Length: 233
Image 1 (tube, rainbow, N blue to C red):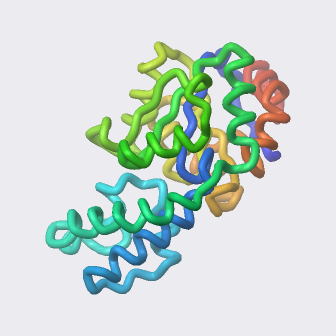
Image 2 (spheres, rainbow, N blue to C red):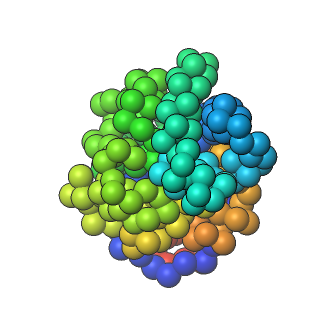
C-alpha cells in the first residue's frame, strides 16, 4: 500500500468502484478485443497504445488511439466489432483478487457502494453477475447512462447521486478513474490490477495505491481513519 499526503477530508459515506480491471480481471480481454477490432477494419494499432487507453469510454477510445478522421468514418464499426470480440473473451474472465471481499467489507462498514463503469450496459451486467454480489451493490451506472464518459466527472457524479452520497472515495485501476474522481470533487484510490503503475496513478490524483482489492480491504479502516483525520499517510 502507498498513501500520499492529503488534507483532512470529511467522513466518507460512499465508495464508487470502477468495474473493468478493478473488480473484474478484464483489462487484457479489452485490450485484445479492441486490437482485433481495429485489425478487422484494416487498421494496425499497437497493442500498448490500446492498453494505455483502456478505461476511457468507447466513445473516446477510437479517437484516442487513432484520430478524429478514423472515428468519423469507422468508429461505430470498430465498436460493434469490439463488442463481438469481447463477448467471446468475457466467458473466461474472473474477479480480481479480493473483489467480492472488498464489496462485503465496504457494506459492513455502513458505506454506500456504487459502481461506475465506462463499459456497455450488457458488459457491466455481466460483470455484476460474475461477481455474484448484487446484494452488496446499492447502485451502478455504465457508459450507456452518461453523456460524457471517463475521464469526465459525469460517471462518478451520477453514481454518487444514485445513492444520495456526499463524500466519496473512487476506487479504480486507471488514470482515467483518478481524473474522473478529481473532476467530480472526490478522492481517488488506485489498484494495480489494470497494469498501470503506482506513480502514474498518484500523478493522476490517487491518494492511496494498493496492489489489489484484497490489500485495500485489509487496510480499509486505517486508510479511512488517516484520511479523515488529516494525518500524514
